[in-house]
Image (cartoon, rainbow, N blue to C red):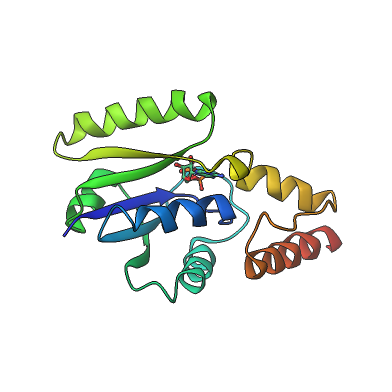
Length: 163
Ligand code: ADP
């Protein structure tokens, strides 16, 4: 069974992330969406909230598992008996960072490969941080986020603003 781990912040998940997951299960038997819980990044949603949102998004897809992880990614990949790390690529800017990470992870465990999936052109500019900025400025985000994510993000951002 070919298992891939798709790690990330998913703060929050966008249609760009959803698209990568949906396409990846055509390539792998099982994909584990792994929410990084020890990231140094300031996040809008707690790790538990992000896991819960992702579980709801993929509840009808038995080949997608959602989990939180901390510590070294390669250790988590081994623990889950996966053989690949899955990452999405949008721009040259992504490439620089992803290239370094892929080489670092390969150095840590040469049996684990990073597999990249190119964004669907219509999602190429979708990033969690840009979408959060649009919501903060009360812009239109229709079609960028699954409805349940959009609703929760608006609630979160507007309740913070009101304080
Ligand atoms: P991280 O902090 O690990 O980069 P993100 O949630 O920002 O976490 O991204 C997780 C992965 O999803 C990364 O590989 C990123 O390139 C990919 N990704 C994010 N948005 C898109 C998109 N619109 N299209 C394709 N891949 C994407």
